[in-house]
Amino acid sequence: MYAQKADVPARKPVTVPLLRAMKAQGRRIVMLTAYDAAFAAQLELAGVDVALVGDSLGNVVQGHASTLPVTLDHMVYHTALVARGLSATLLVADMPFMADRDVPHALQAGARLVGEGGAAMVKIEGAAAHVLDAIAALAARDIPVCAHLGLTPQSMHRMGGFRIQGREPQAAERLLEQAKAVQAAGADLLVLEGIPAALAGRMTRSIAIPTIGIGAGPDCDGQVLVIYDVLGITPGKRPKFSKDFLQERGSVAAALAAYAADVRSGAFPAPEHCFD
Image 1 (spheres, rainbow, N blue to C red):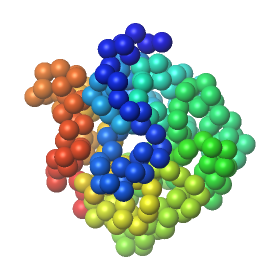
Image 2 (image 1 turned 90 degrees about the horizontal axis):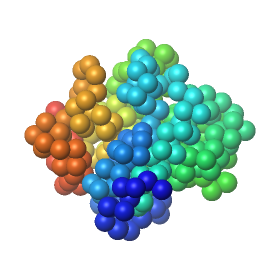
Image 3 (image 1 turned 90 degrees about the vertical axis):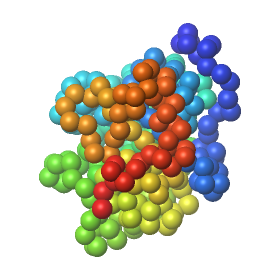
Image 4 (image 1 turned 120 degrees about the horizontal axis):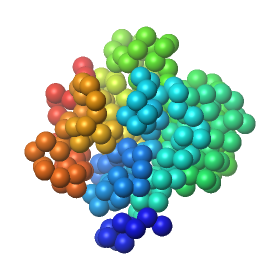
């Protein structure tokens, strides 16, 4: 067991039903990425609701230009590291590229991320027919699923790079329908990335499951950022939708606490972090 857990104040564990209750009560959900036990323990101290072991580790940990080289073994390994640093925070793990290519592979990946990695939920990108089948199969076997729509990094080649999605009316309507489709398939949570703020608000109001925004405006039920962006240590240009919370706080603990407080109060994201 990770040693720093003993220093984390006891709090009520975050569960999948609690996330839906938070949406109903208008309580914003705080999510951050983590890739190891030390940062996971910092999330616990800051009272973060959900830790996401994102395949973004391909970019920020492994140094790749995309998430595509990340394997299932990588994801299981990092998920297990993060699990050792958590007590009450809900743990979500990304399904890596092509893990959802058919139902058997999706079930195998989900079983490993939950059984070996210790995740409470898996995240899967898109809403194509095979993805909806995978969501339904996982949900039927009591593996909670977080869907992911909008700018889906695993689809970067089809999208022509990291481009904002849903700006055209037809594309916006398609995303609205996809949000309803992943909910109907059995998803319990939905990440909305890189879409206009107004559209994200419409999608959030159109479904019963909570939405988590990243570059999707203030009207989602919660927010997520890559922890390295929050701490201002990501190499290169920081994304428009992120904010360096460490710059004015002086410590990692204070920066993460400020992020959590600003998400819960609605101060983050501000207009400068959103897309039209």
